Image 1 (cartoon, rainbow, N blue to C red):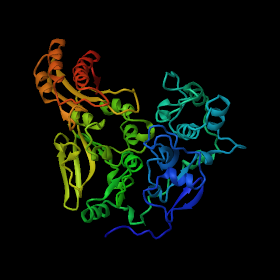
Image 2: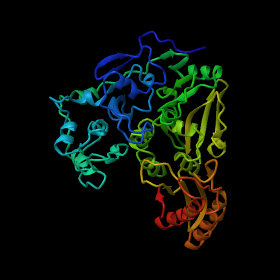
Image 3: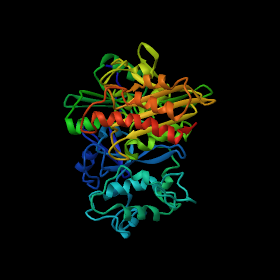
Image 4: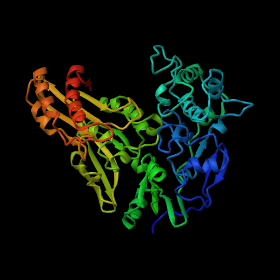
Length: 481
């Protein structure tokens, strides 16, 4: 097998100390590994990335500074995936005798009662505290404090007893880091480079190749390998379904999968870029995606989840597929046989089935330019944030002189695969953009797909939401690109 050989001892720098990974089973989560070593601040509340009690900080390549402290869910990441990396737990931020500013504000403002969730809140809050672009806000709103603190940074942290007001008060009381703050100073140096890793324990293997060619060679030999990036999906399967792949291959730090470019005719998004990275890099250039990102799970999940991973699962309820269908995206698939480009509208072939062969990787996502003038993303779910959609809809409409000249509508959650609302698009194209036209098209849209009854919503509810979504899009006028 062509795999990288680890010439150095596998280890993670935890709170400034190198800690060996020798003999650790490859499916051990970072959370369990930390707790086994006495670092019990991080807790397991859900084991699926929904509560944030396990949050820790990882030194990641930054956009505004060489390093950024990024909060992630330790319950989902394999400890092996952090080989060679640098992390900080709540214990490493401060001590009872010398509290970190975040810990101090949480304490004095009553932000902790039972304390179970507090270390996770502290780590997520610290990531926002050290965010380089955080500056005082002249017009604070219900989601941003006067100190520029973005409450979305805590969207993945759940508190069951304190209540969120004192936690919010603590967040809004934070100033800027001191000049000699060690964690602030650390941002000026790059994070550790990804380590070539190969760990074999009890017949299971974890591999981190250092190039795309190595990955593709490995997949050609072992197409059954589980490819992971942020592990936000596979981590749940390991924790809750006891899935134990014999071979796990990490691709999240491969430079070939982290391309980002904006040209005259297209935008390219590397498949291993996290959703948070894409959101910040695009900086509103694609209004449809700018609407989608805040509704995609939580900041903690988006800090780890990659766009390639979201598409690679083949799920019919992912949030990115309806948006990408509306944007007329295409995918670049890579294997030892070369690269090929497939239209995203052709990518899904059945329930959790796609055109991607077992030995292929999604390399990048391509968005053609120019964008449609009017776009929107609607997500219908039981919770506003951090929930799986019952129905998701992406719109991209072009209207010229009052007539619809093109319409692309992507649907999720209403069939075995994400799909285009082709009948609705036909009902709109060439027609005047009026309430009468939209009401007629909404009746068509209510029958799109094959809505099902499940624990998230009934078939009749899904159908009603499809029709109402189009009416809402017309009433609100979409989002101008």
